[in-house]
Amino acid sequence: MNMNHRVTKAVIPAAGLGTRFLPATKAMPKEMLPVVDEPAIQYVVAEASKAGLSDVLMITGRNKRALEDHFDRVPSIEAALEAKGDHERLKRVQEATELGEIHYIRQGDPKGLGHAVLCAKQHVGNEPFAVLLGDDLIDERDELLSIMIDVQEKTGGSVIALMEVDPAQISAYGCADVSAVEGEGFVKVNGLVEKPAVEDAPSNLAVIGRYVLHPRVFSVLEETAPGRGNEIQLTDALETLARAEGDGAGVHAVVFRGRRYDTGDKVSYLQAVISLASERDDIAPALVPWLKDFVAGL
Ligand code: G1P
Image 1: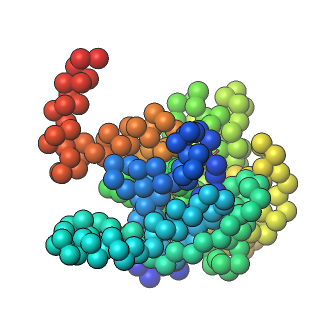
Image 2 (image 1 turned 90 degrees about the vertical axis):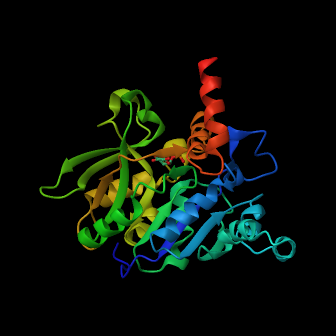
């Protein structure tokens, strides 16, 4: 990986209400739901950190104070573990505080993903930056973000991540019309549509929650009218950029074929927990034999 790249900032929108996980999310942000023994959001921040993005801006809202607490030190817990000589657990507790410099800003009025990204304008300034959606968990063994950063540097515009989905599922996602770029591992985006009806979808390529954006997206977002769900859609701003000319225009995409979980969806969330736990040395020996028996008995 090229560690001298210009992209250093990550923006993580985390202002969503977590309605799909009620009542668990009544008093707790959905980003704090544990995936094995780490909150879902920590995987996302760790992914940004691993790609060299050590400046993270989280866009939060009401009821999200637990996020700030999680990425802060807790001297009393650390002292207690230290006193017990439990260095293993101490290390795990400190991991979250060592992932980078985390900043927080509140969205106030939740007017959609595009509006959340626009809240980052002042912090990001005039540099390309990454956006990682908290609901999307990308398996750390499958590289995506660093490839997208390389593509951004090569193309100069914005870069999105796409994944092939069952055509019947496309209406849950942004959908892209793309064409091949000769000799390259990425594609050109000709157009984008947010959550189209199955019959109107230009492809079965779904937008997943990783973006590397040119700062021109901010001025486009400022001019983007509310779209689907009466929200300001990032997909609509990217559609404009895909068709624009000049500096910072153009959108390319990396088609991801690795493991992704949507931790905002109950079934996919459970799949993430089971599959990640099944691969952990400290859990698998007890879990996997039980899981096999359990499945055989279904
Ligand atoms: C958002 C985007 C959508 C994208 C999806 C990926 O939708 O608007 O284009 O496909 O994330 O997870 P949301 O899931 O927030 O409704």
